[in-house]
Amino acid sequence: MIPRVQKSKHTVLQFLPLREEHVVPLDDLAPEAIRVAVRDELIRNPDSPEGIRHAAALSAVSKRLGFRGGFDGYQKQWPSLRDFMREHGLLHRKNLLAPPPEAWSVLTLRRQSLAERIFSSGRPLPKRIFTGHDFDWAPFDVQSHPFMSGPFQARYALPVVDPAEVAPFLARHLHTHVTAGFNLLHDGFVDPRADDRLVLTTWFDPTTPPDEVKEIQREDTESFRLFQQWIDRDRRGWVELIRYNRSLVFLRAPDGAYDFVFWGLRDRPPPAAPFDGNLSPLDIPDVLMIHARFERWRYFQVERWSDRDEWESETAYYDGGGRIAQHPGSVEVARRCAVARGIYQAPTLPADRTALDGFVPVAVDGGGTLFVSPLVTIAELRRFLLETGYDVRRAEKIDDLSAPNHDPDELPACVNWYDAQAYARWFEQKHHRPVRLLRCAEYLQLHPGALPAGALPRRAPGTDPMQARLTNGCVDFIKPDGTPRTEWGFVGRNEQARFRPGLAWREGAGGLRFIAAIGFGEWLFEHNETSAAAVSTASLQGIHDGLPVARDFFPSSSWGKYRACKIGFRLCYEADDTTTQEVAR
Image 1: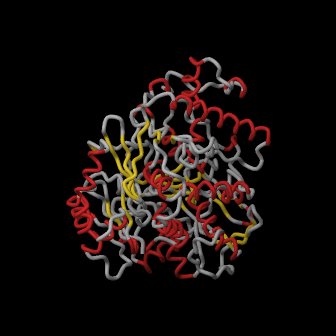
Image 2: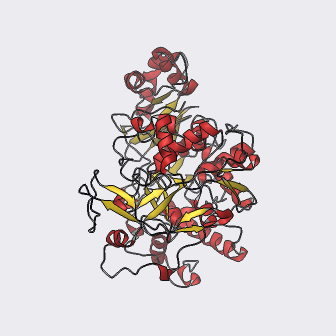
Image 3: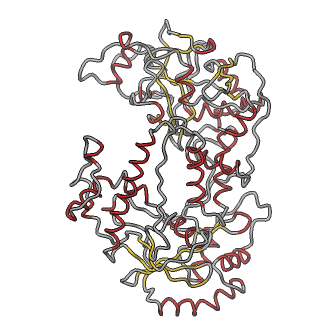
């Protein structure tokens, strides 16, 4: 079970995982602070039948910090630890990994990255590390030195010979080439440096010409080297690293400010159930829980160097011919790599992949086959609600589910993205198929194509886009008096959204039927915690802002009302067992 994580009453910088997947917030080394954290803020593992007793948790914290004799031993050694801090000038606690606001979050070294570099990389402890916490970022003001357009060679004229041009150059390229080296996989941010090897986090599509790859890598390398030379000449931004024992290391700034990191450190609480508060775990299909389970497993792999694992997984993806356009996300890439290397055993999905009535087999890129359903109808949605009682546990704050579903039973149901997932979970359990929504690339491949420009009404300059959609679209918003809305504005909960007569349909791959009309969209798989891809069936762009659908997300809690549209959905599943289990989308 993946739990809901109760939020702390204060900002917590770091967490200490214990045995059996319990977690303690740990921002203070004082014994009383540890006692309070264990008593009041321990994050318990709901799958541990006996939990963990208070004394056992205190003892586990002490052991993880490198102290013997349990918590009693820790309390006895606390005076020695305080003496050590005084002797080394560790005077007042400060977050030394937080750069100032003017750094624009360009360089933010994660606490976990630093802790794993120290304790899990197998490399010696450096004397100093650059965190940028009190560095002078003013010379790199991006507003004063905007990015240059023009020919490639003119934009990236290296080497930079004139010292006066170094800062403007770095400012222009801080978010592009320079940051490719912003990681702790190499020694660029530590002192002393064991070697000059640089690890870049820029990857290339296999179709990128080799000469272009070589040139960009040169720009990345030389740009970072310039930045490295700049920080090397200044004491600001650097902090010393002082080891206390095998599991505890302090950071010290020149003014006596200190911070600390420890073995196994995590800089966020353990992953909670996906979509917490908007979708019950009862209503999440297995294909969406796969990432949640993997993320939780990865969280407790405290002996691993996760930054290196992620870099190696991305490198393996592109070395294996992976394309940028088909990139499934960093979590999925990492999960596949962990499965392939045998360090993670993926949970199995429902095994039956035979065809269901109504699902159409279609070939997709990569040689696989998908079984794809028609648009889910209002009748099917009602059956789901009747059998599950989902409407009772549905989150109250999201749009009313009845308002857009007063059309005839055979027409497409209109739902928000969470509703579509709950339906998929019910269908999965009922029919034992690993169903999901179509991905953006799959949908665009199967659809017969966007309506020609001549078939789309022109919007007069200055016209509200939502007013134009209301006027020219396929949906009427019916007011309580029974008349359709003619002017766009706030749509109340008591208004119904109904399809206009003459709904246009087109036929796509395998004979699949698609609505092709302004004002109707379909939910797709790509998502984050609060929004998801929704495609316009008229333009094949995102239905929210008309941008490419893979980056034009729509609020997951809306069925389209506030954008003058209705959004439906359809299901699919892979026919190939190998594809489904290995890709586990």
